[in-house]
Image (cartoon, rainbow, N blue to C red):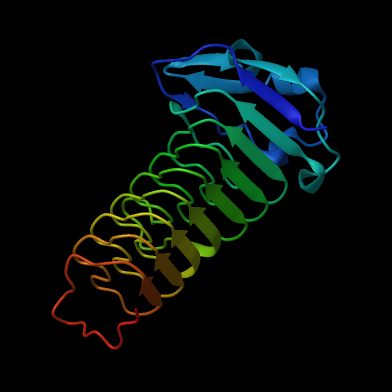
Length: 228
């Protein structure tokens, strides 16, 4: 049975959900999980102050499943650095979901914020609706973006998807904004919908597959083949 966390009430301030991870929850009792500390704005709170808890964790991260319920659009850093296990989110979720993720699976039933899968190395993230900017990208001041794993977005995504990407797969069913794959060095990006201007700016390697219309391409690129 997974650990089920149901948000008690919506919040207007950011919440740091870094402790919500199979790596943190594994081997802990429900009471121990309830006492994990989080930041709600500038206030440190116990996890049980924000969520109703039920279920039980596994003995290892791989055996641990977490089910989150509620509008988590203000909650960031869920699943940061997770190595195994499963996180399922029934609602929207905030920034930095699955950042530096190494393994396991994360799924979000609605939207996800910016920096989805930033610097991830393995595992799978699936978002059923839209995602924000900088999917799989490098954080500010870094040149190392996504290095492995898969990100699947069934809606639209923002700008600079795959920025500084080193490896892995990003697939977007909907549309993407400008600077897709900027500075990417390896990996694959597939877009099924429309692509805004300047895809592949400064890229030195990897593959971008555009299955829908593109606003414009840079002068340094040429169209090799168009399929209908």
